[in-house]
Image (cartoon, rainbow, N blue to C red; front, top):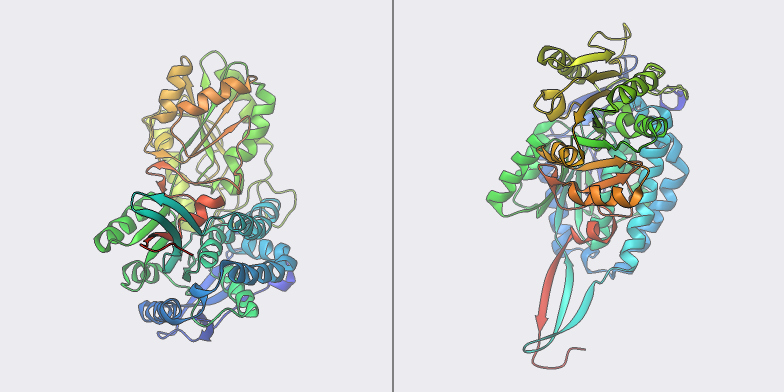
Length: 486
């Protein structure tokens, strides 16, 4: 790990713009998934700290200046944050690599730089956003205002932490909301560093808090009556629980949840180019990506060629130290995640799928690594084809014709992402329109962070990025007057 990142420690939470000791004095120790050694510490907040943060956010929203500023004034503060953040993009990426094992090559693209880009893209969306518009109603002219939704609780996972904080925090702030951020306990350090940057910007008291801690912090935030909206990214199981709690309170909620995306390889696809694309699309971030293309659908005619090409690609992957620029696959975030993925591999073998390469035995004595594993001869009713594994595991399934391929792709509880690989892009568009997924790629899969992102079915509710992401943080108010509106 780079020397400047060695054992980064925080003793205080960022509550309402002030640094405070947690009321219960608990600590989180951040463990390197590569070395299995501590690399940092952060405070473990509790429900009392959440209450303090929400109370500050509630007061700031109800009585403070932030929601009452012109959007352009709020955007000016976000531009200041972008200027503070920009010089530290590479350091932030390396910190996240140290926290959760993302290969440095991926972190530099998808962790720090991606988060920085989101700030600018959110600002661009806000410049064209209609904060108020006049319409002709049946009783005269109507003014439709977009008002901030209120106090937002933003709960983010560990896999791409800054990348997932920004599309919640920045649009919410631009809209005039106040925000309490709850990062994952595995990755608290980058969130607290972001709090330091926010402190430099000088937002009004109470506008942003960062409360690190375990599940009790998230539970308290979701249940708190002072919170108007929860924005959550994580597993579908936790998302369902959050949705139920928010439903009881009629609290606004947006959920970006899991995926089990299908990559449909048509017979006219260039196999070498397709497999090269699937190296990233299927295995990005050590396979710890909700959009990963992990179900590989190929016709019976081309199955052997695709399996051989995937095996050749995966056998050449470099597994090891995530700070090595040549590393393709780093460690998984935690030992429990390593064990979970190994259990899926055992399950695939037990259910009758064939392991082409890889397996459940770890490739190293130290670190939470899993061998890149390729299954063939699988069916879509197996756990490895239905459940989100979140590790470097690909499963090949065969289809009889294109209609059958689409049916298999749609035969999933999830609907987050997907892709089709073909020499005919126009035909690829036809396939895309038939698959129930929130984002889709033709001859590639990569998020476009200027476009709406979210899922169908159990992959979530709502959208992030672009004007649709900003719209998640506003309420509509219609104002009707007997007199002309000025």
